[in-house]
Image (cartoon, rainbow, N blue to C red):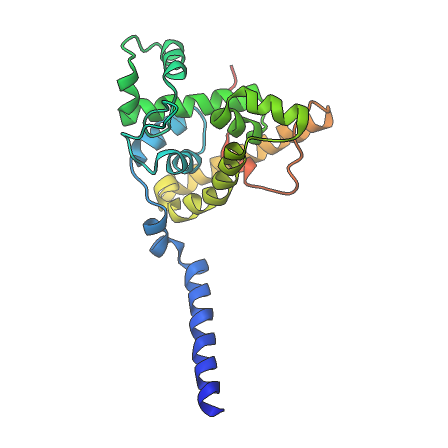
Length: 232
């Protein structure tokens, strides 16, 4: 009995220690589970197109695991798995006259196009991040299917779940990368928080007008993903 008691006590201590380590020190173990690369490019285009950098990192992780040479069976290419036709349209929109499908293998081009595309989708869908994710993964047809029948393709449903389940870790584990540790980092974080507050107010206002936004059901992550578009 005494031996069993000692073993159970040791086991309980190990379990509690593991939980504390997991919750309290994500920076230590998180980078092994959630890798990061191309952070300078992510920060550059996230700032340029007003999208949270940790979210773009999450998308890259979900799409390609940071493999710039990734290609899907459907033809999606590069870090952010952009289809060639979409890449050609984005290149035209952004004034890149040298586009070819192989350009999507370039990390900077992929991050630039993918980040701009997400900004475009979130604006098109009036702040509804779920629909922006649906459109990025499954095209506008996935959004239409969801609006008409309330169902999604299995792949797209899994994609949304993967992004939501991973984003918080990329925010926590790499907070120093996104915001820094000095005064400028604190300032950037304060600006980010203010932008999130403005976006929440915007979404609440749209809901009040019954303009078709999905209910957020208390999930706060959506408000951290996209910053409000720059005033024109």
